[in-house]
Length: 243
Image (cartoon, rainbow, N blue to C red):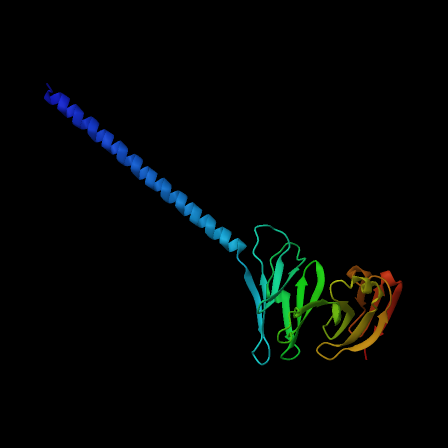
């Protein structure tokens, strides 16, 4: 036969048990919520890393054709891979960019007309790569993209202004697309000079040597009208007098 004290003790123990069970249930629910949230965040992070990112979309002058360039998503820190696409036609190219991400400025698309375009791919550790696009004939299964090697033009790679910023000297060289590095050793360095803001005139050139080495040239101004260029790798110097 239970006494009042036994009944009171029973009620106290039952309350403690129910409280303990309640805490366990709440703790379990919180644990499940944390695990689900962590999995959701991990899934979103994974999807973001593996998601393709569009860099550039370019339309032909008549707006009828579209070329897209996207970066493939990846979980690694390797150099990025881009996919150039036109409708169902695709071309993949790996860009040597020192394992850094690409920006829209790393891609250039120039339309020659409504059916042809030139695509330039730039990377920090490579020469520009040139891909030509030509609209395929109806019913043709040939790819519209083709990697080509070409001369990209004459570009300045070193400049120097006179002490009072009146005149300027530029050293320019022809640059070539990826795969044509063998031509660089044969490229002469052309020297241009003139007033800042004016069209510069060609003064002369340095032949041979290594045009990729900027340390090969020292440009020293005596005053705003006189400058000397010392080309160590070429074993040659040049004196320029502005008029």
